[in-house]
Figure 1: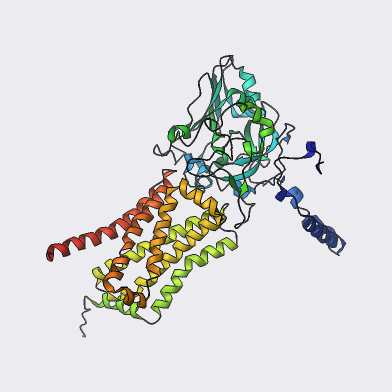
Figure 2: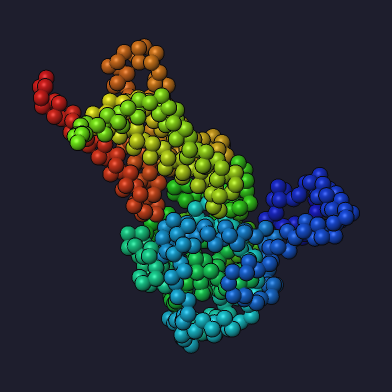
Length: 331
Length: 218
């Protein structure tokens, strides 16, 4: 009989994630000693600060209030990436192809006024102002793993609500099968709009059932504050079981269609980037393995990379959408 | 009133004298260690950004390219300036190219691949540019291991020189390796800089070889 009943096991938890008893005991002992000391009370508080520091606001941008999400899979137990790392290591090619470029140049982006056009095969198309979008549904905090197709990962506490909340408002027609996302392409503020790199504006897409999945997030903030520009302000998509490039940033248009929409990376390299791009350790990128990943800020310099999880660890929530599909062909 | 005319060759001689100074070579040796020192300190104090492993692989690669440019610039510099003393630094710069290339290879194998030979073999098959880099490193290894006086004597001057001409192939392979790496992002701005510098240095040699051949027909 297994030591831990199956229902209480978290498939995403690796044996290596569990703190060894000896380390745990040492920490307890250290904390006890601290608490006993003359300055014990204050030092014990300091030593315990890690427990709540993660949910503390970085204090850089405007606060965005939210409540903890109750959607299954929305709160992973992994340690969130530091705000500094999450805001300085970004792929946002409109601001340059180097990962340090967006943090340097994205301050030029104007996020007000901002509207998102929602149209296509819907009964109630509309132009939504960002202030209305922010109030459209209750803001939730969700802690998601983020796996980049390049082989690194982060853990981000996002703030937003399910994309389905917005889609329900526009009432998709029965003929709608896909959702296309188009992001801003503004020459005046975006220095990286080089036609040699990609066709602009950047477009992405999801199947309608993927778009309606409760885990598919329309995010307005992270770490309890509004999104920094380099992370896709003022509104972006977050699809945690797909490679990061599927999560379009700074969205200006959402269109429902009956045909699979072309995606920017798929157009640039069809052999390398598929429409689905689900995180899958068994299907390699043509130029590198997807079996492992480096967790930014977490794994030591000389540590072996950690194993990538099927659907980035969200298989229980999203796996059934792909039942019967050949994920090698539909990568 | 004393009339002093500076010989037009004076500055040239001053550079040559400086290059011949007792402390010049130790100084050059220390300068070569600076990038490594900086990388080690930056890694130890967490100054390499969100992905220090990636930064270390990238920086050791870039320093290899820079030193390779410098190594190939020494002979043209000596010829064009007439300062023979530049030749004293050729071997040291060449060995530094090999040293930084080895650090680059080590950073890749250890930090990126976890010293896992199966992973490395699979990676080599998937990314031909890794193979290109590895071949260039093997060529540098051949040069570094025959860089001592005894090796020159053992091989004989002509054969030694022929072997060390492999550095031109290293330059081409290094640019190809860098270009291929950057191709995924279509970001060739700095590839173009290194390619032009190395191209110019190779073109100078080609031009000289062609004129020499024209003057001394076989």
